[in-house]
Length: 71
Image 1 (cartoon, rainbow, N blue to C red):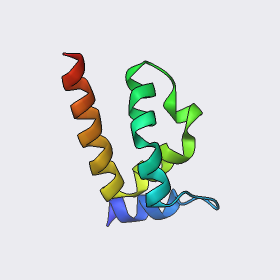
Image 2 (tube, helix red, strand yellow):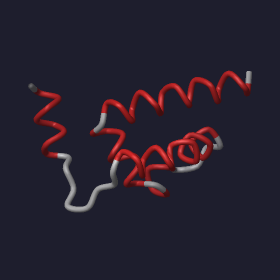
Image 3 (cartoon, rainbow, N blue to C red):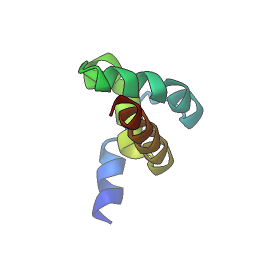
């Protein structure tokens, strides 16, 4: 219940869709791993990831794969 309420309060007037988020996740991960402030550069992606479990899972998978390539 607490997580659900947190997501409701974090809702913004303008948000991106899951399909828009999926299109930007790889760029988000690349910039994040490069040390860029992705929360500032791509705030709508960050906000969507905080709200959407499906996109969050996609992000986590891509991030894990990207860090495997680096190691």
